[in-house]
Image 1 (tube, rainbow, N blue to C red):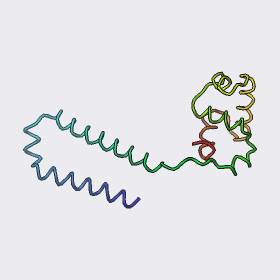
Image 2 (cartoon, one colour):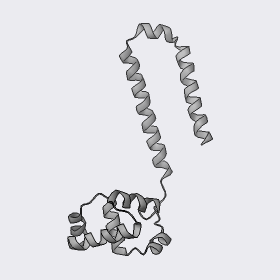
Image 3 (spheres, rainbow, N blue to C red):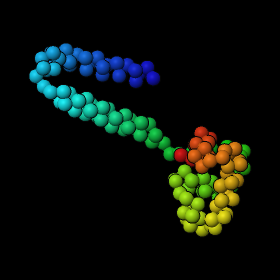
Image 4 (cartoon, rainbow, N blue to C red):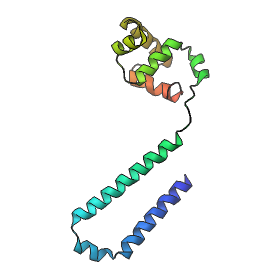
Length: 136
């Protein structure tokens, strides 16, 4: 955390130095506001790309599901497959077709998941499963 703060402090200090070095008052009168807005937008876009790359680099390890949590909740293999499909944003009919189940069986699995995870909505189930590291 301190390394990140120091890095951003250095970036800001270099930016301040660059503005001073370029004699900001002269440039503010010489160029239109749109150029500055475009430059700031490009800087934020580059920072966003860099931050995305940096965060993606940190997640290079393979996902390992939390088997202890799965066993303590009593989740079956089929319920885990349904949970994964829920996290992928699939509808009940799509899940049924993908897993070769009837839509009513999928509804039963989802109801069991809700009861075991102690939630009442799909989004809550996915969030709870991610907190417990059941799904990536």
